[in-house]
Each structure stands twice: as structure tokens, then as C-alpha cells.
Image 1 (cartoon, rainbow, N blue to C red):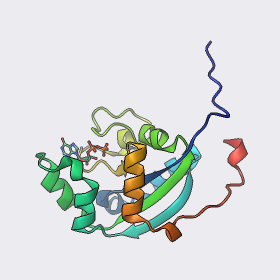
Image 2 (image 1 turned 30 degrees about the vertical axis):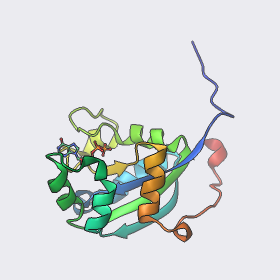
Image 3 (image 1 turned 180 degrees about the horizontal axis):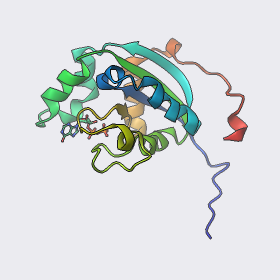
Image 4 (image 1 turned 90 degrees about the vertical axis):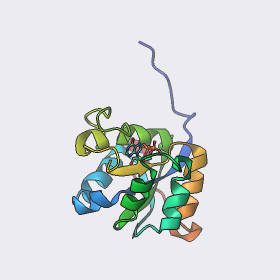
Length: 158
Ligand code: IDP
């Protein structure tokens, strides 16, 4: 079998994630964060916040004009969310795999959306989809001093 040696070529990345208002209402905060921790991702920033209309509009500006846009903005500003920055090798792609497809109907079992979501809009969690959006989204919600550089003592075991 082909075994790709990944060590040495790993890229450390940071990605922006937030748990949507329905995840807080459904009391799934711990469940979702646990999945990221178990995967081996490092939490380098985390807070609860109520997203402003301006932040939501900036976050979802690529979707302006689409039919789901207005209800989406209304939903994500309808209650508090839990926002975090996760760090790890290829974190952006890794987290996207961990959360699963946008549409719960297409999300595989074992992914967060595949296990907990039934609606596309209320699909539990958001994660950046590229390096460019990760950089933009992190700075939209976190100040530099709210992000922490620290060693994870078990890092060598992941
Ligand atoms: P993503 O969250 O997986 O990156 P995007 O295509 O960027 O997916 O869409 C942003 C969010 O907009 C989705 O997470 C979902 O909440 C909502 N959304 C996307 N497409 C639809 C749709 O067809 N109906 C309702 N909501 C949608």
C-alpha cells in the first residue's frame, strides 16, 4: 500500500470556528468542542458572544443576494454563539472534514453535522473554508491579545 509520509511537511494553521445559536439552545456546546479536542486540535482562543448584524454581514458577504441570505443573518444574530480559534497541522481542511458537508443530507455520519444537524441553515457549526477566509474571520472576532501561544504537552502523541 501507498503510505504517504506526512511528518516534516505539516503546515500549522489557525482556523475560525463558531457554534451557531441553535447549538447553544440544544446544549450541544460540550459535545461539539469535545470532537475538536479529541481530534487533537488546540484551542488558542475561545469566547461567548452575541454577533452584531455588522459582523454577520461581513462574515457572510459572499452570500449577499442569495435566497437564504436574510434568514441566515437573522438566525446567526438571534442568540449568543461560542466562537473559537483552533490550531493544528492543516487545521483549516482538517476542521472542515470534522464538521462535514454544509448540507446535513450529504454530511457523513461521524462528522459533527452528520451526527447532529437536520437543517442546512441550523447546521450546528461554522468553520473557515480557506486560508484567506480564516485570516479574515479570525480578525473579525478576535483581537491579537485574545489568542494564546502555548505548548500542548501531549502534542508529540498526536
Ligand atoms: P459552510 O458553512 O459549510 O461554509 P456556505 O456555503 O458558506 O457553507 O454557507 C454558509 C451558511 O449558509 C451555511 O452554513 C448554512 O447555514 C447557510 N446555507 C447555505 N446554503 C443554504 C441553503 O441552501 N439554505 C439555507 N441555508 C443555507
